[in-house]
Amino acid sequence: MTAAGFDLVTIDSPDTDRMAGFWSAVLDLQEVEREDGDRWIVLADRSGVRQIGIQRGTVRPGSIHLDLACAPEDFDSEVDRLLALGASAVAEPRVETYGAIANLADPDGNLFDLCAYS
Image (cartoon, rainbow, N blue to C red; front, side, top):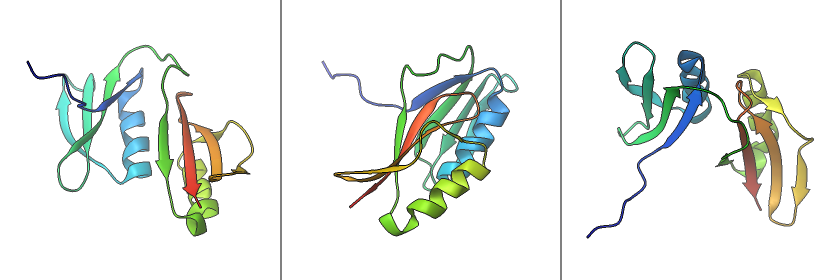
């Protein structure tokens, strides 16, 4: 028997088009699948590997979050870019022993972090 493997992260949202647009812009992904109008949208990287599914549903913020990473020299500009795309800051960016971190939320309130490891 083969164990189940990772497929993709699925985010529930009442506005799947808005969330697909947000995460496409944040992670430079493209829509590769859509079912029932806007009930289910899949985003993939440039090589076609599925990364995120956006599914129409009820938002339950805080149950899971994504960690994104960038180069230390890009941290401030990347935080600015994410905020301009519709993210909100949950806390002030800070420096920890491993590097800089910004705690953010997407437009539906789902938490994610941006890390710049030093």
